[in-house]
Image 1 (cartoon, rainbow, N blue to C red):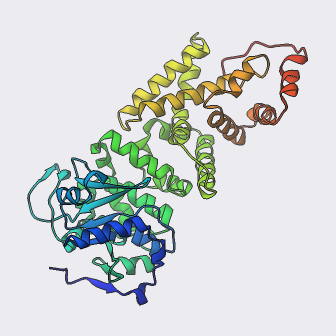
Image 2 (tube, rainbow, N blue to C red):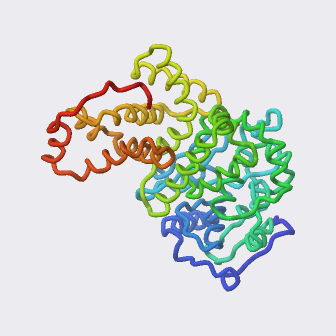
Image 3 (cartoon, rainbow, N blue to C red):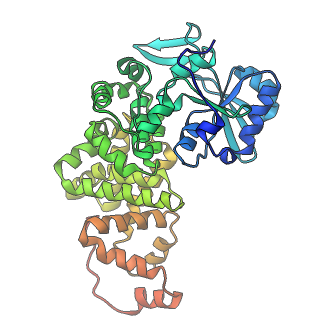
Length: 418
């Protein structure tokens, strides 16, 4: 039975550009309906279309159980998740997430200290709606009737530009602390205002982030990094005292030295610009930028104590990764990429001899070079290095050879400093 607060918006009222919805998503919904189930486009795609944005992900909600979805789509479907069981349907090169309506009755739900550890209680569409995080995500598009079903006044909140949490913040943020990071991401990406009252609730509940598994927390951090508006999100993380929960040691160094705030702001702005222009990004780059704040002082201390630069670099990097592991579980592949970017900063100092060729052809050269440019933007002492490695990329092989071998210059011994 539907909630009394349900508001239905017809196609004439909502005027959504339905042609932007991927045909595969429509096909999945039609197939579920043909088998006698309810199925709707839900959440972010509906929200973004209402805001005039162009969604890339099309999530679907249905009353079919994961097993029933699997039975319909056979080998195109895979059931995933333990905390929340979902169906992933593979169509072409894309994956479509199909979730069964969540229910409000007790059942296969495990709650520990207020946090939902496992939840596979299924229910009706109106129960599903009130279980969602924000009102703007409790919107369901009926593709057959072309109506929007709004259970939590999400359309109204979108029009007023407000991000409103569904339910009691002190309960909802404990159930799933990641909702606080999602609030910051939606605020930055969609321009939806976090009210002063909601900000206070986030500050009061932010310590619950410690309860989130480190791997999941890193995934949410990457979503923030690559939301396209991380410069804004960074300012909000600082305002709400959330950065110290994600990167505690980096946060301490920002407070001690204003140059690091400028460094990270510039890094985030550059990544936002790349995303705006459709260029590729990798979590390696911004992870390297944030962890650099802790790494560099450790590296310098080890060199002063007599470690050679290469050993000091690896030891300092290992310490940083071990410290960070207590909060965010950074995958090994990303850790290795970060180490290589930092190692390149050492190699960039050597601008003569055959080692230059090895640096130019290093698999992480581009990321390391972008990191050097970032450093040069903030600290003038790296401008000469940045200019050298910029110019050499466009030179002919003969010109490169002449530059690094041709002229005899006095080679001073490289100091340890990065």
